[in-house]
Image (cartoon, helix red, strand yellow):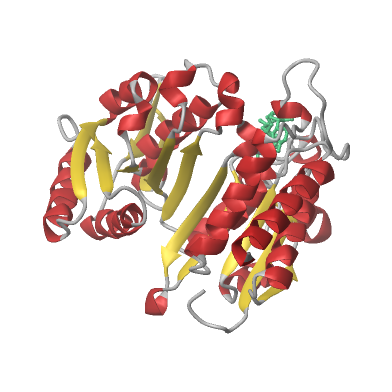
Length: 374
Ligand code: NAD
């Protein structure tokens, strides 16, 4: 870690399996405060359906203010059948959108990592996904999901027409490039920028700005690819990529596609970040999956996606890369040791509970830290 001051972590467990997987992750957070010299001050808040039940909104002003005052947020998952009938604007999922938009978290990071112990879970052949490690950096506060004008109008003859607007300012492109390039520096120093510069004005601007940025940062090997080709290359030869940087819409689609390559919803973390003052990076860290109401309350949810989200938090918001790598290694070892929650077990394989998986990860953390000390 860069400095010794306590890091403020706001924990928003949410709904369904959210509180279960967050509880398990907090056992891991405690391990790091007790064994790795990290000082983390934890505060809690309600989000999603739990917040709607408590105060009528998916994220209260009070919780938003707490998030703003913290260094990072660990988010579980929100939503569930109880709130499905609510209008879109007041649904549980709006809680996370309020955080992203309100805190200007413009870079959504989605790693797609394959675990060798689980290669059989991918729909692709093992040799195509073995050792896969891609990071998709998606612009997340602009583009077609936010552009104006938008809406559906009905003309005099009763026919409806819909409009969305894809718009980008060059600063919005540049700042997400900065994040992608910086993260690439800690990986294999390659960034592939994905756009539709051949048919879209925003694509042409995207390519011009990323090219200029690449020229100013020659330590990173920058390439460009059209989004349709990228979708094809992700299933044909995904290992050619290191970091992919792209706009909101393409990033939404391509990051789901990349995640599916690994075949493991319960294993994949995410971060949504922004550069703060003095270079600190505030981030919201959360699993890519939802609240899984079908298994909530059973104690069998896989906590790994949330635990690996905390590893991203260690690396990005706490500048604790060594500790992040230790945690990622402990997860890898637990999986290669055959520990399985039901979602990743092959038929007939022995399974453990959420707590059992966390026990296995904590035990590997103890072994690894003893080895380091020896
Ligand atoms: P989901 O991701 O919750 O579940 C899909 C399937 O994957 C289910 O069978 C579930 O049991 C399984 N699954 C998911 N996470 C798992 C884990 N950690 N361990 C084991 N199995 C796991 O998606 P869904 O069913 O489409 O959505 C359920 C609710 O979650 C909805 O209300 C949806 O709106 C919400 N949602 C929230 C977020 C979020 O909070 N960021 C994201 C996606 C969906």
